[in-house]
Structure formats: C-alpha cells, structure tokens
Length: 120
Picture 1 (tube, rainbow, N blue to C red):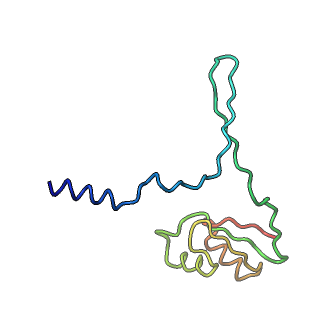
Picture 2: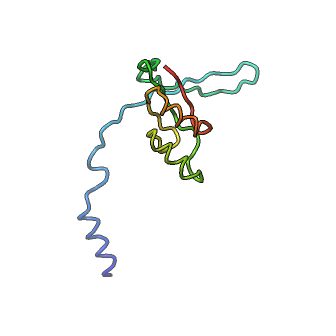
Picture 3: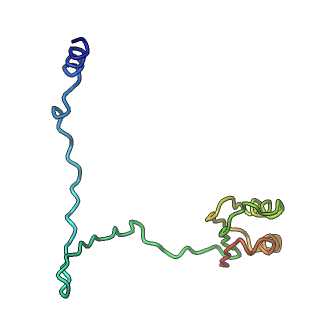
C-alpha cells in the first residue's frame, strides 16, 4: 500500500495541469483550399511569408571588391588556407569587401577557384 499512498500524495501536491489556462497563441489563418476541376481533388495552398526586408542591391564603394568563399577550405594546401584567412574568409558563404588593388588581386588569383568575386 505504500507505493499507492505515495502516488496519491504526489498527485495531491502537484498542481493540476488544467487549472491554469494557457494564453491563447496567435491563431494562424486557415490555409486556402482549391479544388482541381479535372480530378476533383482538394489541394491545400499555403501562402508563403513575404520577406520582411526588401532586398536592395548593395552598392559597393568605388575601388572595392566583394569576395565570397564558395568552396570549403578542408583538405586545401596550408598556403591556400592562409590566403583565404588573409582575405577574412573562414567558412563557406563568408563575404568580405576588400580594396581593389594589386595585393588583393594577387590573393584572389591564388585561390580564384574557391571564390566568387564581384567588382564595384
């Protein structure tokens, strides 16, 4: 009987789950349903969220280059990894804006096959 009484005591001490009403979350609008004429099948169509920020074309300062790392540095030569680090690139997808000068052009030429370059 001890286990049964212990369970009963714990049940009395524990707050009831239904006692505190949960706050209503924002209700999502029901998805629109469209019926396909030929087959009679109902298709649920959901609206995609619109982008909160409008994408505007980023203007680069004159005399600069936008460099993006497109391929991984894993398994590359130490010198290639060092050149990428000197450009400020560590992971795939990293983007930096570099001055358009001879040293930067040399670095880009060394690892051009790993990069995507946009000039101003």
